[in-house]
Length: 64
Image 1 (spheres, rainbow, N blue to C red):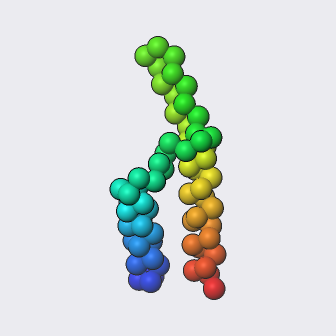
Image 2 (cartoon, helix red, strand yellow):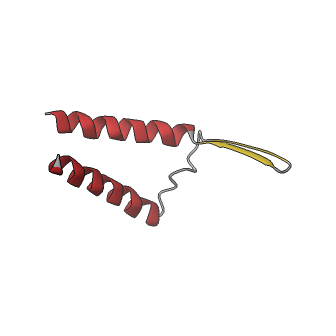
C-alpha cells in the first residue's frame, strides 16, 4: 500500500511540474468549448483520454 501511495504522489507531482513548465493540459486540441453569451460549456475530451491512458499504463505496470 505504501509503494502505491508513493507512486501516485510521484505521478501527481510530475503532472504538476509538466503544467508549470507549459504543458497545455486542459487546453488541448479536441477539448470542447462552447461560448454563447454569458454561458460557457467546457468538456476536456482529449485531456480526459490522455489522463485515462496514462493511469491505465501506471496501474498496468503496478500489477506486475
